[in-house]
Length: 275
Image (cartoon, rainbow, N blue to C red; front, side):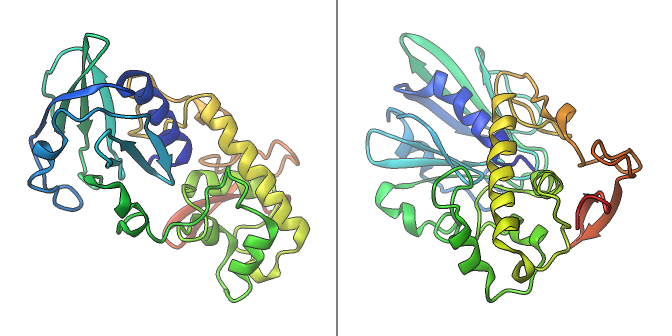
């Protein structure tokens, strides 16, 4: 599943094309995505003008000039592609033509598994939207502090790996980056959150910001399905330190990386460095 850096990368690519653009046409080929797309979405959105898109957690939000917000969730395998011609490809579920500075672009949503979603709602409904109302703080924002984590962890007995991936606590972190963050912070993913010291929490926050920013800078991680809108792939995968490195040597201590399954998710650990 695309995580925060991949979604941020898509947002930045989209912004270059759709900011201040007019929606000329929008067409759905399938509306039975993870949730059913609204029947009147095409009519409500046509001839609106898009304002600059932004990201909230793993969701792309594109405001319009009519106080609506167009939401895209990429799900497990969703891709946004920017094309010059409206040519329908396999697994394309939406096609949208926008006009910007007398140029036309085709924005398509492609999703082989159909675990993503597309929605349109009023701006005033943002805080109550069923996908957005309960998500936690942005990991790159000022709200992610030691005090915030302590308040969220003090009554919990979950392990830190699951806590980092809990979207109600921190928005946007998934399996790949949780493994990378904990490796750099030298913390075992199975540690219970109420056992972590202030120094531990500070390390987690520090490396969360470093790793996510670095990944955004190089275009997101390419794992299986992710593709940027212009068709190019993120290449942060080449810089991963622990994820997918089972039986390879740790770059810090030369021990072997092992894989464990935590909550049905593959987790990669250096048991010598991560205590």
